[in-house]
Image 1 (tube, rainbow, N blue to C red):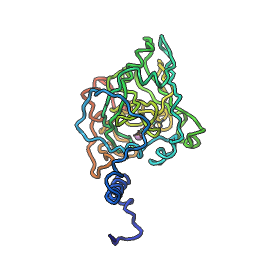
Image 2 (cartoon, rainbow, N blue to C red):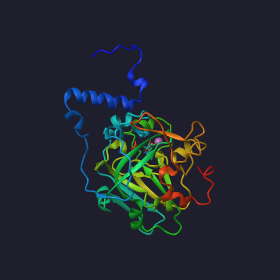
Image 3 (cartoon, helix red, strand yellow):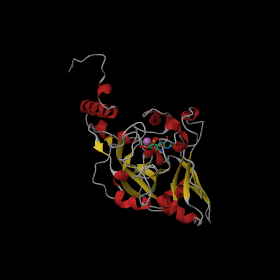
Image 4 (cartoon, helix red, strand yellow):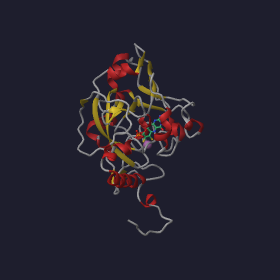
Length: 307
Ligand SMILES: Nc1nc2c(c(=O)[nH]1)N[C@H]1C(S)=C(S)[C@@H](COP(=O)(O)O)O[C@H]1N2
Ligand SMILES: [Mo]
């Protein structure tokens, strides 16, 4: 069918790109038969999982968007760059060194991490500081299960997460947007909160590189940049760690980074968000909808100052 429209306007310019791609995929599926759409993405391995706590009554963002609309600046700053560029990332062998203020520092191999605790399905609302959100069915285990093994000392107050910095496979490292490697941090009690997980998969399969394979942080009540990808080192420390985004733009990104519709980013409002795959905006929820679970971590703190 031929549709007349101004040749200078592409549908991709008037519709959010992933919604346009979704329509395009559906049209192709219509032409080629539904089998094309049903074909699974190129996942590496199915994981044995158990249902986790925190049931969420919202439909998950479609797999194609979760694995193609990404922020992973080491692989480029364009949303669709990581899907392409991160193919070069080798996630085996892989190990994570857990060290610093603990009685039993240890280097964990990825196979060991996959068996450390039951792998739970944890569908979480995720909110990027840029103003978009997704619902992602993660597979992972509580960070507390890992920290318990190394026995943090009483002096440990924060946890620092250091991610892979490999110029051989990460073209984005040549761009000085951030002070590489990408580093994030949590207060020890935030890291030990039952909502905080180390994710190794999504939609029941091992993570793809663009989502932070083989292991990444997921902290659903904080802006997405806290959820550091492809972790290689976890350090227990006494002082609040310097974090990549806080160092790059301290007036815009604080250490806490809790989702907060009442504290705007200096350049845009945080009151609403667009769920990827949808056209109308939603109201952003305090602590991304996890206030009942986490608000008590911040009692007495001025969340406008400690953003
Ligand atoms: N190492 C690393 N981790 C990262 C980032 C990054 O650029 N590098 N981007 C963060 C940001 S801004 C977001 S919103 C989430 C996106 O995760 P997703 O692409 O799996 O949805 O990853 C976070 N973790
Ligand atoms: Mo983000």
